[in-house]
Structures are given as C-alpha cells and as structure tokens.
Length: 163
Image (tube, rainbow, N blue to C red; front, side):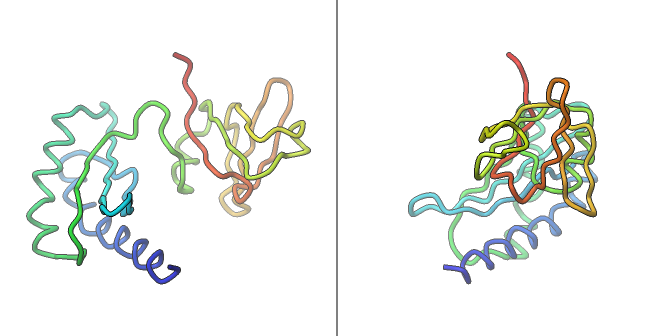
C-alpha cells in the first residue's frame, strides 16, 4: 500500500510537470493534480485557475490540449478517467504557495484533534493573517484572537465563503 501511494504521488508530480507548460501557454495556473482510486476506478484530476476565473470552456480547452501529450508520454500504466476542473470558491489549500497566495483571505481549518489554543475545537474559521513557510505555520485571526496553527495539525484547509 505504501508503495502504491508513493507511486501515485510520483504520477501526479510527473503529470504536473508535463502539463504545466501547456496550461501556462493557455493562460492557466495548475492549482492541483491528483491521481486517486475510487472503488475500482482511477481518476486523474487536474484543477486549474486563472486571474479571470475558470469556465467549463476553459476546462475543456485544457483537457483537449493535454490529451495527446499525456497519451504520448504515457506516465500512467492503468486505465483512468481524466477530469479538469476549477478549484471553486471554497478551494482546497494544500501547498505552501496556496497559503502564501491566500494571506488576507477567510479560511476554514479542520483539525486532526481539538486544539486547546483555539478553545478545544476541531474546526477553526478565520482570516489567514500570515503564513510562515519556514516553520509551516498558519497565523489566523479569529475574532479578537490570533491562533498560530502548525499546518501538520490541519487535516484539511479550505477557502471559506458565506453564501
């Protein structure tokens, strides 16, 4: 199982490197690449963004542009479904550059365990006031308080949006 996970990460990284120049040429930023198994099916999920936002036409445009290069490079042995999408309003924040880009934004953090510094809760919502990449710590402003949250304690981080 560990070997499979390592290979999945390598596949996602390989695909990211392969398609990044294509996406950039079309004016898109690769937000994330995942290669995941759901039941008996494998999915290659590519999430893109741009300053103007992403439409279904943008997703289709990139899908068509990367289809042949992916087939030619053949980085994935098994059959898979290719999905290209927008990260959405409540996008997942995973990588250091995601946090750096999102400073000043409203985020929701689901924790692995209750955090005493945040009142013993397992979910925190606040403004990402700073991100310390060296220490990998999120600095959140929650009401009148500041919470320094090591990213290793976060199970998931999303941009938060009130509908």
